[in-house]
Length: 252
Image (tube, rainbow, N blue to C red; front, top):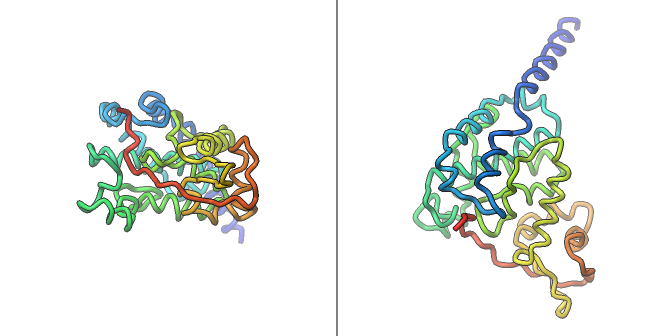
């Protein structure tokens, strides 16, 4: 029993030491998106000129072990995974650049790639000790491990229809503010979501259709989105989902 307690203590201590060694401010990634992301649009050509810095950042993510990750706080874990999703998505695009859409990655048929989710199921990086794909970060970690639907406004799949990629890294000490800002910024974008009171129709991004169960665990979908609209949405409003724009979120 004594030996078990000592081992348990040592494991916890080492996890704490490992966790302290990781840059939870994500400064390299923060610097890149500050320079090359504007109004949610990405200068992929610009990031190409600093692929070494991007590779350095991705390497630091890949070197985090499962034990080290388990030593992170909840906000540190969420920030780690959100930034990893966004940064590895940029890497995926650059690996195939130039492309007009992330759906061009895979087979020559973008509709097939989209229907089968091929770009998001492609294992092209290592995280927490194993080969991973983007869907693993989103569905097996962020959606599964945290009761936080606002992550859908933070992770960006390199498309115009997605929420905007923000020009800063997500960081634990700012995470609540950042997630709320991402949610409201997305809801208030009339190109993505709007309410036509004359027809009592609420037009929403397909994100709210694809992941409706994430948004309605504690409330209705209309109640969930209401804070992003100045006008009161009637509870009997019809909901229609806008066509999703899969064009690359690239600065022109």
